[in-house]
Length: 241
Image (cartoon, rainbow, N blue to C red):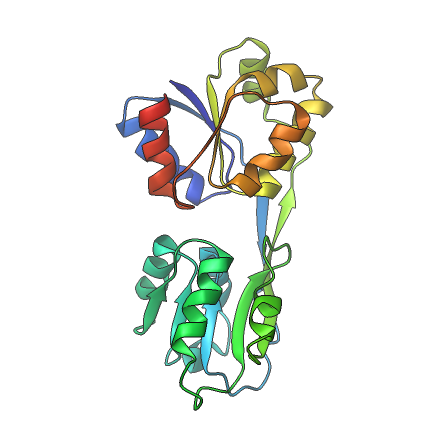
């Protein structure tokens, strides 16, 4: 299949390589640009654990002056990929949740049943978030200190080779890893007067929430991964493609 990967670098390279190994032709269009907030003010603590929902949070920590002090904290990651990046970054006590904020909140509730763990959670987050972790835990009396350490900025147009491929009907499917990247895909398609062509391809989405703007715009061929992780999305393409 001729597939388009729209996620930011460096994750796009890894996904494209995995698809190429499976025999697909892959085009890139990084429709979001990640900006790290390397000097984010984390607060004084103490914290009972650190929470991360993207490897970008860990990239933002690489040069942060408080990084060494955080290495001893338990880390709760949204999924296996983010957990693996945390371990590679030197964190030793890392727990992977089920892949979305709902499962992450459930995991934290189970861990926090011990009343001694009442210090706030430090959540290193993106500026735009798909779920309300602090709100989900508020009913349990948990305090979540949210610090924005990265932001995803939308691009305003497709790279010329991608626009040409869409116009010529040379793309069979698009992978969508976030709602914002799906929205950026639609915005770029409208700007290039290619919305019909952009909607006509098959859309492979990490979750139903990500698929919503595509369905609302009129996309008819939408497939959703069984789990909100990259491995499940690749499995979906193997089955549906």
